[in-house]
Amino acid sequence: MTYIYLQPYNGCDNNIIDEIAKRLMNTINIDVKILPSIEEPVYAFDPVRNQYHSTKILSYIVGNHNNSALRTIGIIGVDLFIPILTYVFGEAQLDGKAAIVSGARLKQEYYGLKPDKKLYIERLFKEVMHELGHTFGLTHCELPHCVMHLSNNVAGIDKKTSNFCENHREQFIKRLKELEREYGK
Amino acid sequence: MGNKPHIIIVDDEEIVRTSLSSWLIEDGYDVVAVASGKQAIEELHKCHCDLMLVDLKMPEMDGLELMKEVKKFLPDMPIIIMTAYATVDTAVKAIKEGAFDYLMKPFDPEEISITIKKIIKQQMLEQENLYLRKELSKQFQFHQLYSKNKKMQEIFELIKTVAKTDVTVLIHGETGTGKELIARAIHAESSRKDKPFIAVSCASLTETLLESELFGHEKGAFTGAATMAKGMFEMADKGTIFLDEIGDISPKLQMDLLRVLETKEIVRIGSSLPIPVDVRVIAATNKDLLKAIEKGTFREDLYYRLNVITIDIPPLRERPEDIPLLVEHMIERVNLETGKSVKRVSEDAMALLIQYKWPGNIRELKNVIERSVVLAKDNVITVNEVGPCVSRGIKDPESVKDMSLESVEKNHIARVLNDNNWNISISAQILGIDRTTLYNKIKKYNLQQNSN
Image (tube, rainbow over the protein chains, first blue to last red):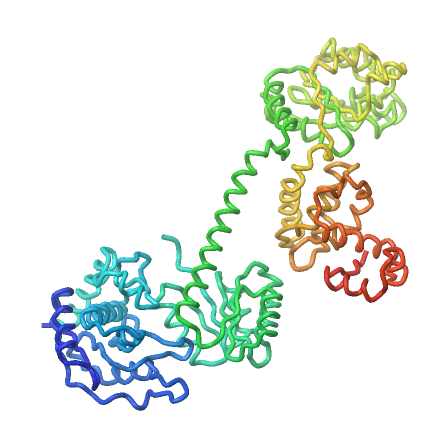
C-alpha cells in the first residue's frame, strides 16, 4: 500500500494537521501518514530578512525522506523565502520527493484581520495540494479554478478550488499509477 | 496549446539562477539560466527566446552592455533588468536603452508574475498583428502591384477584365509608376500567361535598330546582317509584346506598327513575305499623345488603334496611403537581397516619406528604401537615412500640415544641418538660435551626421 508523509514542524496545530491529512486522503485517495513534529529549522533562518530559506528546508526534508513513502510534504508555521522572491507560500521539487508549505501568510491575522481557523485550513489544504501536485510533475494551470493555478496572494488562493482541473487530475493519476508500479516492484 | 514560452536568465549568482529558474519552471516556462553575457549570446544563437531576465551588475559584460549587444541582432527582444541596488538613475538608463522593465531583487512574486505574463501576451498580440497585417496586405496585392488606393484598385479590376480579351491596351503614367508591372499583370491574368512576355523600350534604340528588333531581318538585309534574325513580334507569338515609350517612335515605325496591328502580320527587313503573328500588344507612354497628334508627331490612326483601352496610372503623390504598404514590401525584398534585417521605419521618417512629392514615383521610392536599408543602424530606418533623399521636397507648408511641431522642428534642423555640412555656427545662424541651443536640440532629437 502506497502512502504520503506529512511532516509537521513544531508550532503546528495537531488538529489542523489531522484535518489536512483526512481531506488529502478523501481527495486523492492515497493513504496519508503523519510524522512526529520536528524542531524549527534554525539552519534556514536569515536574520537580515527575518524569514526562513525554503530551499534549505526542502533539502533537509528531501535528505530525510523515507523511500517507503511516495512523497513527504512538510508543513511549517514560519514565513518562507527564496533568494529572488520576497516570499513564497511553499516550494516543491518538481517531480521530486518532497515539498514544504508555510502557513504564515495564510492566516487572517497576518493581514491584521480576525483569526478564521476554517479559512486557514482551507487555504493550507489548497497549498498542500498545490505543492503535492508539483512533486507529481504538474506545472501551473491557466484555469483559475484549478488548484494548480498560480496564486501569489491569499485572494488568489481563496478564488481557486481545492481540486485539480480535469487535465491536471488525469496527469496526477497517470503519474500516481507510474509511481505505484515502481513501488510495487 | 503552443510551445512553452522560452526564458533566458542571466545572472552571475548561482543561487539566483537556481531559485528563479525553478520558480519559473513550475510556472510552465522553458528556462535556461546562464552565468554571463557571453554565454547568453551563445544561447541566443542556438535557440529561440521569448524573454530575457538580465542582472544589471555582472563581471565582464554588465546587464546594459549585454542588452545593447542583444538589441543589435534581436531588436525586439524583451529584456527585464534585475538588480539588487536599484537607483533611479540606473532604472531610467535601462528603460531608455530599451529594457522592458526594471525589477529590484528580491521580486515580489506577484509583480514578476504579472510582468512576465504581460510580455508574453504582448508578444502573442504582436505575432497575431504581424500575421493579420500580412493577410491584409495580400488583399492589396495584385501580382507585383501593391495598392490600397481606390483608383489603383479599379485598375486591378480593369486588368482582370481586359486580360480576358486580346484588345490593345495603352498605359499612361509618369516615369517610375510601374507601367511594365501593369503590362505584366495583364499578361499574367490572360490565357497567354504561359507564352512569352516581351518588353521593348522604344526610346532606347535608333529607328533602324528598333525596326530590326521589332520585325527581324533576313540574312544580308543590311550591312552586318550575317544571319537571319527573328524580331520581337515573332518571338512574342501567342504571347504579349509590351512597347514602352511608344510616344518616342519615328513616323515610319508608327506606320509599320499600324500595319502590324491591322493585318496581324509582320514582314522581316529584307523580305516581302508577310508572316502571321498572334500577339497581344500593350503600349505605354509618359507623354500626352493627344498633344503629340496636335503637333503632328504622332499618328492619330495609330493612337486610336492602341487606345482601345487606356489605363491611367496615378502618380505616387496622389496615393500617399500606398507609401507605408510599398515601403513594407520593399524593406522585405531588400532585406532578402542584402541579408539585413531592418524591421521598420521610424514614425518621423515615415512622415517625411509620406509628405515628399516623389517626382520619380515608385522607382525613386525604391531607390530611397534600398539606400536606407543599407545605411540603417539598429534595424530601424530613421530620418537620418531618408532625410537627405527627401528633404528637398518638403518646402510646401501644406506638406507639413499634419506633422507635430516637434517633428517639423526636428526635420527642419536636420535639413539645415545637412545643407550646411553640419557647420554648427552657420546652421545656428540660419535657424536664428545660439549654438548652445542648437547643440541641445541635436541632443534632444538624437540627430546624427550622416556619412553621405
